Length: 163
Image (cartoon, rainbow, N blue to C red; front, side, top):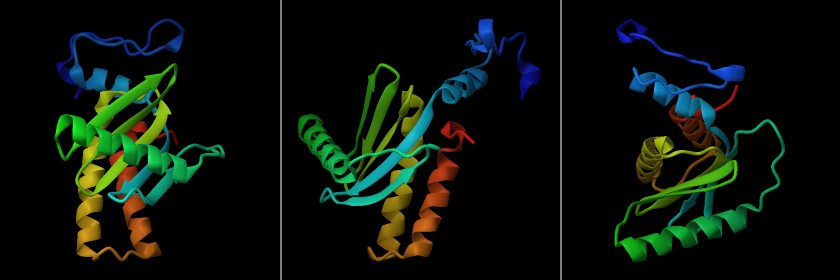
């Protein structure tokens, strides 16, 4: 992979990653390595909290129903304004951010630090998977199904999760 790269600098002053003008793959890796995901929530079209995952190694005290209502409201508002069934929104404030992606059945929100638009395709894949999975299961899922969903989510987001 690195054989085609003429010159690159992975780390700059103080060990801070620098962007390389030579390789988009390295730039994407560096962009992903800056984002740290902390929390994911999925709500259904009625605004009901479907699934939430705490990725951080600390206890986050979040009002899940409040977040679910917020995601549902933002999703509904963007559907009305943009007249599209699927939407994507990114909001950053200081070092925290939230990325929201929705389709006709679900809305997913991810909270973390330094969230960028590079996460959007991964959120879209998770939405597709969840929608198809729930359709196949006729809306009825058990603990084993939840574990299967969690494995898919972690697999899709592996470049953004800290170990």
